[in-house]
Length: 149
Image (cartoon, rainbow, N blue to C red; front, side):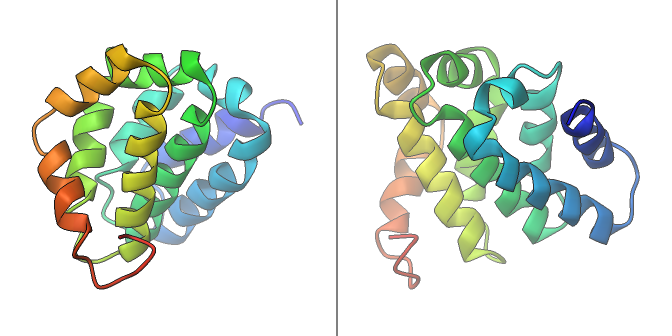
């Protein structure tokens, strides 16, 4: 459906009620598995999702991390764009590893970082150099929630 992805991204950027932002973030999360390239190709999409990693709503943070996780899985171009040209994304995912409010957010952040590193040595090195990534991942090994570990 033309226009859906840009509209959902706009809803995440605009001052919207929490329920609208949560619904938009969850919709993008659901659309991402079969629309990786279309979503990643939307102007500003990675920047919007990166900003959502620090959203006030835990569900938005979690869905943003899950969407990024899906955008980079087996998509080298998306991974390179996110890790090498959207530096704030890796920092946001590293910060999300310490999210005390949402185990799902921690789980998706760890998975997104793992997906970033699974194919390219340059990306793996760039992610590993980002402050907080390695220590954050190591700390997740002791998380009380099994999916986070």
